[in-house]
Amino acid sequence: MNFEKIKGLLVAPFTPFNEKGEVNYEPIAAYADMLHKNGLIGVFINGSSGEGYMLTVEERMKLAEEWKRVAPKDFKIIVHVGATCVKDSYRLAQHAQEIGAFGIGTMASPFPKAGRVEELVKYCEEIACGAPNLPFYFYHIPALNGVFLPMLPFLQAAEDRIPNLAGIKYTFESLYEYNQCMLYKNGKFDMLHGQDETILSGLVMGGAQGGISGTGNYIGNVLVGVINEYNNGNIEKARELQNYAQEVINIIAKFRGNIVCGKRIMKLIGLDLGINRTPFQNMTDAEEAIVRKELEAIHFFDKCNKQ
Image (cartoon, rainbow, N blue to C red; front, side):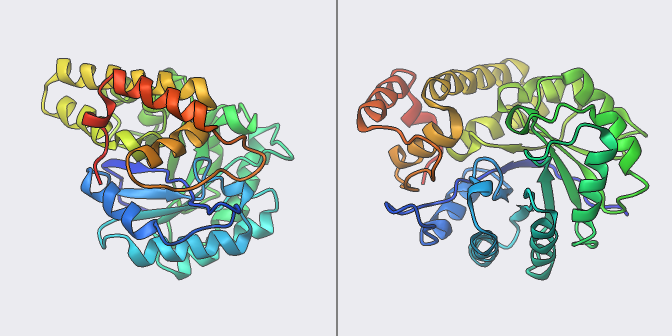
Protein backbone atom coordinates (compact mmCIF):
# COMPACT_ATOMS: atom_id res chain seq x y z
CA MET A 1 0.00 0.00 0.00
CA ASN A 2 1.23 3.48 -0.80
CA PHE A 3 0.60 6.12 1.84
CA GLU A 4 1.31 9.83 1.93
CA LYS A 5 4.66 10.60 3.54
CA ILE A 6 4.48 13.15 6.31
CA LYS A 7 6.29 16.42 5.72
CA GLY A 8 6.55 18.62 8.77
CA LEU A 9 6.39 18.24 12.52
CA LEU A 10 3.65 16.61 14.59
CA VAL A 11 3.43 16.86 18.37
CA ALA A 12 2.90 14.16 20.98
CA PRO A 13 0.44 16.06 23.21
CA PHE A 14 -0.02 15.74 26.94
CA THR A 15 -3.27 14.38 28.31
CA PRO A 16 -5.03 17.04 30.42
CA PHE A 17 -6.05 15.91 33.91
CA ASN A 18 -7.96 17.70 36.64
CA GLU A 19 -6.81 17.95 40.26
CA LYS A 20 -8.30 14.51 40.99
CA GLY A 21 -6.41 12.84 38.18
CA GLU A 22 -9.41 12.45 35.88
CA VAL A 23 -9.11 13.26 32.18
CA ASN A 24 -10.13 16.85 31.43
CA TYR A 25 -11.27 17.17 27.82
CA GLU A 26 -12.11 20.88 28.00
CA PRO A 27 -8.65 22.34 27.12
CA ILE A 28 -8.15 20.24 23.98
CA ALA A 29 -9.75 22.70 21.56
CA ALA A 30 -7.49 25.55 22.72
CA TYR A 31 -4.55 23.15 22.77
CA ALA A 32 -5.09 22.11 19.15
CA ASP A 33 -5.46 25.74 18.08
CA MET A 34 -2.21 26.72 19.80
CA LEU A 35 -0.23 23.91 18.18
CA HIS A 36 -1.64 24.71 14.74
CA LYS A 37 -0.85 28.40 15.13
CA ASN A 38 2.77 27.59 15.96
CA GLY A 39 3.37 25.60 12.80
CA LEU A 40 2.70 22.02 13.89
CA ILE A 41 0.83 19.86 11.38
CA GLY A 42 -0.76 17.24 13.61
CA VAL A 43 -0.67 15.16 16.78
CA PHE A 44 0.34 11.69 17.90
CA ILE A 45 -2.03 11.16 20.80
CA ASN A 46 -2.08 8.73 23.74
CA GLY A 47 1.62 7.94 23.46
CA SER A 48 4.35 8.34 26.06
CA SER A 49 3.89 12.11 26.46
CA GLY A 50 0.16 11.51 26.74
CA GLU A 51 0.59 8.92 29.52
CA GLY A 52 -1.26 6.48 27.29
CA TYR A 53 -0.46 3.38 29.33
CA MET A 54 -2.03 5.00 32.40
CA LEU A 55 -5.34 5.55 30.59
CA THR A 56 -8.27 3.20 30.25
CA VAL A 57 -9.37 2.03 26.81
CA GLU A 58 -12.51 4.14 27.14
CA GLU A 59 -10.51 7.26 28.06
CA ARG A 60 -8.21 6.73 25.10
CA MET A 61 -11.13 6.39 22.72
CA LYS A 62 -12.82 9.50 24.06
CA LEU A 63 -9.58 11.48 23.76
CA ALA A 64 -9.22 10.38 20.14
CA GLU A 65 -12.80 11.43 19.44
CA GLU A 66 -12.27 14.83 21.05
CA TRP A 67 -9.03 15.55 19.18
CA LYS A 68 -10.72 14.54 15.95
CA ARG A 69 -13.72 16.75 16.73
CA VAL A 70 -11.87 19.96 17.60
CA ALA A 71 -8.66 19.84 15.57
CA PRO A 72 -8.26 21.99 12.45
CA LYS A 73 -9.47 20.10 9.38
CA ASP A 74 -5.96 19.78 7.93
CA PHE A 75 -4.47 18.41 11.18
CA LYS A 76 -3.12 14.88 11.00
CA ILE A 77 -4.22 12.77 13.95
CA ILE A 78 -2.23 9.61 14.58
CA VAL A 79 -3.51 7.50 17.46
CA HIS A 80 -1.12 5.46 19.57
CA VAL A 81 -2.92 2.19 20.23
CA GLY A 82 -0.22 0.15 21.98
CA ALA A 83 -1.19 -1.77 25.11
CA THR A 84 0.00 -4.75 27.09
CA CYS A 85 -3.18 -6.56 25.96
CA VAL A 86 -3.13 -6.99 22.19
CA LYS A 87 -6.94 -7.27 22.14
CA ASP A 88 -7.19 -3.77 23.60
CA SER A 89 -4.78 -2.52 20.94
CA TYR A 90 -6.83 -4.13 18.18
CA ARG A 91 -9.98 -2.50 19.54
CA LEU A 92 -8.28 0.91 19.72
CA ALA A 93 -7.03 0.50 16.15
CA GLN A 94 -10.54 -0.30 14.93
CA HIS A 95 -11.88 2.75 16.73
CA ALA A 96 -9.22 5.02 15.21
CA GLN A 97 -10.25 3.91 11.74
CA GLU A 98 -13.94 4.34 12.54
CA ILE A 99 -13.48 7.99 13.60
CA GLY A 100 -11.38 8.87 10.58
CA ALA A 101 -7.94 9.26 12.14
CA PHE A 102 -5.01 9.81 9.80
CA GLY A 103 -3.09 6.80 11.11
CA ILE A 104 -2.22 4.56 14.03
CA GLY A 105 0.98 3.61 15.80
CA THR A 106 2.23 1.41 18.59
CA MET A 107 5.37 1.10 20.65
CA ALA A 108 6.57 -2.31 21.78
CA SER A 109 4.77 -3.57 24.84
CA PRO A 110 6.81 -2.98 28.03
CA PHE A 111 5.51 -6.31 29.37
CA PRO A 112 6.12 -8.87 28.20
CA LYS A 113 9.07 -7.50 26.26
CA ALA A 114 9.64 -8.75 22.74
CA GLY A 115 13.02 -10.46 22.74
CA ARG A 116 13.24 -11.20 19.01
CA VAL A 117 12.28 -9.34 15.86
CA GLU A 118 9.77 -12.08 15.02
CA GLU A 119 7.92 -11.48 18.29
CA LEU A 120 7.74 -7.74 17.62
CA VAL A 121 6.50 -8.24 14.06
CA LYS A 122 3.77 -10.61 15.26
CA TYR A 123 2.65 -8.11 17.90
CA CYS A 124 2.47 -5.29 15.35
CA GLU A 125 0.82 -7.50 12.75
CA GLU A 126 -2.09 -8.35 15.04
CA ILE A 127 -2.63 -4.69 15.89
CA ALA A 128 -2.23 -3.19 12.41
CA CYS A 129 -4.90 -5.42 10.90
CA GLY A 130 -7.44 -3.72 13.18
CA ALA A 131 -7.21 -0.64 10.95
CA PRO A 132 -6.22 -2.03 7.53
CA ASN A 133 -7.02 1.21 5.70
CA LEU A 134 -4.82 3.44 7.87
CA PRO A 135 -1.04 3.83 7.77
CA PHE A 136 0.59 1.98 10.65
CA TYR A 137 3.75 3.31 12.32
CA PHE A 138 5.93 1.36 14.72
CA TYR A 139 7.02 3.66 17.56
CA HIS A 140 10.63 2.78 18.38
CA ILE A 141 11.44 4.15 21.84
CA PRO A 142 13.51 1.48 23.63
CA ALA A 143 14.49 3.80 26.49
CA LEU A 144 10.89 3.53 27.74
CA ASN A 145 10.00 -0.10 27.06
CA GLY A 146 13.40 -1.79 27.08
CA VAL A 147 12.97 -3.36 23.64
CA PHE A 148 16.32 -2.72 21.97
CA LEU A 149 15.73 -4.57 18.70
CA PRO A 150 17.27 -3.59 15.35
CA MET A 151 14.93 -1.66 13.11
CA LEU A 152 16.24 -2.52 9.65
CA PRO A 153 15.62 -6.25 10.20
CA PHE A 154 12.20 -5.28 11.58
CA LEU A 155 11.30 -3.49 8.34
CA GLN A 156 12.63 -6.38 6.28
CA ALA A 157 10.60 -8.92 8.25
CA ALA A 158 7.42 -6.83 8.51
CA GLU A 159 7.04 -5.34 5.04
CA ASP A 160 5.38 -8.41 3.50
CA ARG A 161 3.29 -9.23 6.57
CA ILE A 162 1.88 -5.81 7.46
CA PRO A 163 0.38 -4.34 4.26
CA ASN A 164 -0.34 -0.98 5.90
CA LEU A 165 3.13 -0.56 7.44
CA ALA A 166 3.98 3.06 6.63
CA GLY A 167 7.16 3.46 8.64
CA ILE A 168 8.67 4.09 12.03
CA LYS A 169 8.53 6.86 14.59
CA TYR A 170 12.22 6.63 15.47
CA THR A 171 13.08 7.88 18.97
CA PHE A 172 16.56 6.50 19.53
CA GLU A 173 20.15 7.74 19.40
CA SER A 174 21.51 5.74 16.44
CA LEU A 175 21.56 8.09 13.47
CA TYR A 176 23.40 5.38 11.56
CA GLU A 177 20.50 2.95 11.96
CA TYR A 178 18.00 5.71 11.23
CA ASN A 179 19.81 6.51 8.00
CA GLN A 180 19.97 2.85 6.98
CA CYS A 181 16.20 2.57 7.45
CA MET A 182 15.76 5.77 5.41
CA LEU A 183 17.82 4.29 2.58
CA TYR A 184 16.11 0.89 2.56
CA LYS A 185 14.54 0.21 -0.83
CA ASN A 186 15.11 3.78 -2.00
CA GLY A 187 13.21 5.33 0.87
CA LYS A 188 10.20 3.03 0.85
CA PHE A 189 9.28 3.75 4.47
CA ASP A 190 8.36 6.97 6.22
CA MET A 191 10.94 7.45 8.96
CA LEU A 192 9.52 10.01 11.38
CA HIS A 193 12.28 11.55 13.46
CA GLY A 194 11.40 11.42 17.16
CA GLN A 195 14.37 12.81 19.03
CA ASP A 196 14.09 16.58 19.41
CA GLU A 197 17.72 16.92 20.46
CA THR A 198 18.95 15.86 17.00
CA ILE A 199 16.42 17.08 14.44
CA LEU A 200 19.10 18.92 12.49
CA SER A 201 21.32 15.84 12.39
CA GLY A 202 18.40 13.81 11.03
CA LEU A 203 17.81 16.40 8.32
CA VAL A 204 21.46 16.53 7.30
CA MET A 205 22.31 12.84 7.42
CA GLY A 206 19.05 11.03 6.86
CA GLY A 207 17.10 13.41 4.71
CA ALA A 208 14.26 13.41 7.23
CA GLN A 209 11.10 15.20 6.14
CA GLY A 210 8.72 14.45 8.98
CA GLY A 211 8.92 14.09 12.73
CA ILE A 212 6.97 13.66 15.94
CA SER A 213 8.04 15.83 18.86
CA GLY A 214 7.47 15.88 22.60
CA THR A 215 9.03 19.24 23.42
CA GLY A 216 7.23 20.69 20.41
CA ASN A 217 4.33 21.24 22.78
CA TYR A 218 6.09 24.38 24.02
CA ILE A 219 9.01 24.93 21.60
CA GLY A 220 7.32 23.72 18.44
CA ASN A 221 7.93 27.05 16.74
CA VAL A 222 11.66 26.68 17.47
CA LEU A 223 11.79 23.12 16.11
CA VAL A 224 9.73 24.02 13.05
CA GLY A 225 12.24 26.82 12.60
CA VAL A 226 15.10 24.30 12.54
CA ILE A 227 13.39 22.47 9.67
CA ASN A 228 12.47 25.61 7.74
CA GLU A 229 15.89 27.23 8.08
CA TYR A 230 17.61 24.04 6.98
CA ASN A 231 15.31 23.69 3.97
CA ASN A 232 16.05 27.32 3.04
CA GLY A 233 19.78 26.71 3.19
CA ASN A 234 20.33 28.73 6.37
CA ILE A 235 22.44 26.15 8.17
CA GLU A 236 23.87 28.51 10.79
CA LYS A 237 20.41 29.70 11.82
CA ALA A 238 19.15 26.12 11.91
CA ARG A 239 22.11 25.20 14.16
CA GLU A 240 21.37 28.15 16.44
CA LEU A 241 17.76 27.05 16.87
CA GLN A 242 18.72 23.41 17.43
CA ASN A 243 21.20 24.41 20.10
CA TYR A 244 18.55 26.57 21.77
CA ALA A 245 16.17 23.59 21.84
CA GLN A 246 18.90 21.64 23.60
CA GLU A 247 19.17 24.39 26.23
CA VAL A 248 15.48 23.92 27.02
CA ILE A 249 15.86 20.14 27.04
CA ASN A 250 18.77 20.45 29.48
CA ILE A 251 16.40 22.20 31.91
CA ILE A 252 13.55 19.69 31.69
CA ALA A 253 16.03 16.83 32.10
CA LYS A 254 16.70 18.05 35.65
CA PHE A 255 13.03 17.69 36.62
CA ARG A 256 11.90 14.24 35.41
CA GLY A 257 11.85 15.07 31.72
CA ASN A 258 9.23 16.12 29.24
CA ILE A 259 6.29 14.14 30.60
CA VAL A 260 6.50 15.78 34.05
CA CYS A 261 8.42 19.05 33.62
CA GLY A 262 7.24 19.68 30.07
CA LYS A 263 3.62 19.37 31.12
CA ARG A 264 4.17 21.94 33.87
CA ILE A 265 5.79 24.28 31.34
CA MET A 266 2.47 24.29 29.48
CA LYS A 267 0.95 25.89 32.57
CA LEU A 268 3.72 28.50 32.57
CA ILE A 269 2.90 29.51 28.99
CA GLY A 270 -0.81 29.81 29.77
CA LEU A 271 -2.35 26.40 29.08
CA ASP A 272 -2.83 24.49 32.33
CA LEU A 273 -3.06 20.76 31.55
CA GLY A 274 -3.12 19.68 35.17
CA ILE A 275 -1.20 17.00 36.99
CA ASN A 276 0.40 13.74 35.93
CA ARG A 277 -1.25 10.45 36.72
CA THR A 278 0.28 7.99 39.16
CA PRO A 279 3.00 6.66 39.23
CA PHE A 280 4.56 9.90 37.96
CA GLN A 281 5.82 12.22 40.69
CA ASN A 282 4.37 15.65 40.05
CA MET A 283 6.46 18.80 40.25
CA THR A 284 6.29 20.80 43.44
CA ASP A 285 5.65 24.53 43.51
CA ALA A 286 9.26 25.03 44.58
CA GLU A 287 10.50 23.07 41.57
CA GLU A 288 8.21 25.06 39.29
CA ALA A 289 9.71 28.30 40.59
CA ILE A 290 13.22 27.03 39.81
CA VAL A 291 12.19 25.96 36.30
CA ARG A 292 10.60 29.34 35.63
CA LYS A 293 13.77 31.12 36.73
CA GLU A 294 15.98 28.92 34.55
CA LEU A 295 13.69 29.40 31.55
CA GLU A 296 13.66 33.15 32.05
CA ALA A 297 17.48 33.12 32.03
CA ILE A 298 17.45 31.76 28.45
CA HIS A 299 14.62 34.12 27.35
CA PHE A 300 12.27 31.18 26.91
CA PHE A 301 9.03 33.13 27.30
CA ASP A 302 9.98 35.36 24.37
CA LYS A 303 10.77 32.40 22.13
CA CYS A 304 8.33 29.62 23.06
CA ASN A 305 5.00 28.64 21.52
CA LYS A 306 2.40 31.39 21.79
CA GLN A 307 -1.26 30.89 22.55
